[in-house]
Image (cartoon, helix red, strand yellow):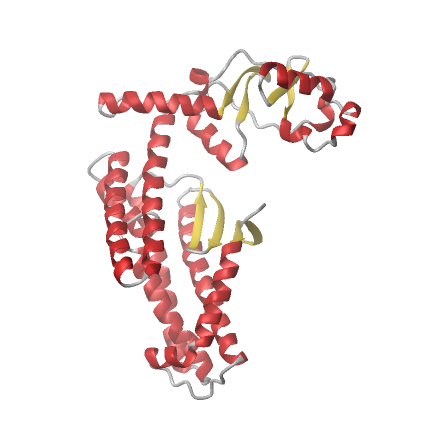
Length: 371
């Protein structure tokens, strides 16, 4: 089941909406609509002219949408600055905790990472100023209410993102600061440790004051852990070539092989996927997922060539293993053929990479960072 769907494309960057956002928008609209007069009193807006009922919930919906438009602009600012610095932006996803700009890889240069990270909070502050001015000149109380509340939310968004903890912008700025005087991986580990400490303190406050803080603390702790782990994986795998860990003894199948025979081959060798080779050249790849598209009582009617995946992404022996790992995650596959001069020379699997990472990371820790 897909958990997000594309809603459009801006400046060549696909924008996706996670289904969790739909629930959050509905909850915010209901929460604000139900307490609109109390909120108006807190933020100092005259609620006269605002009718309880449908109008108050429409105002709540407008504020919820305004919040996530603000978050989108925050992420778009990150993406445009990053792209201007040569970083490829694959997509932006809006979800329950805000937005995520999916960059091909965050630059390891401290100055670039700082510029990409800081533009988000500055954008939120700019939106806050714009909403403040709009609220002042708005002739309608309901509009003034929406703009004033968005001022508060955008200032909070800027401040929250400056917390020195991953995955917030402040965590990346902190890492960039550390990276000016030490290695990138060491800077990441320090910034992640500080982020985890913030998460712990936030969680303690949540126990005594607001349970929602516990959820945010968990989000921050997991984000810090994943960032540290991800950087370690990239650092280790960037030092390895595909030829160093690929399997050269590759079992292949022919496109003319019947599916019944293919199933027998799967049972025989205990592998669920095979490159498809014809005249010594790879023409596709087939896995059990491809076979499952065929009804069981019609298996004898099809060959491997009928159901195989023809659009095969391949790597060369000189390819970087980190690039393979990233592509596996992007395409959600567990193996890639390795070719040289269009000839199949090996295969690299997720298991190969995980075994290599485990061994190399152990050696790196033993040697104090040198492989």
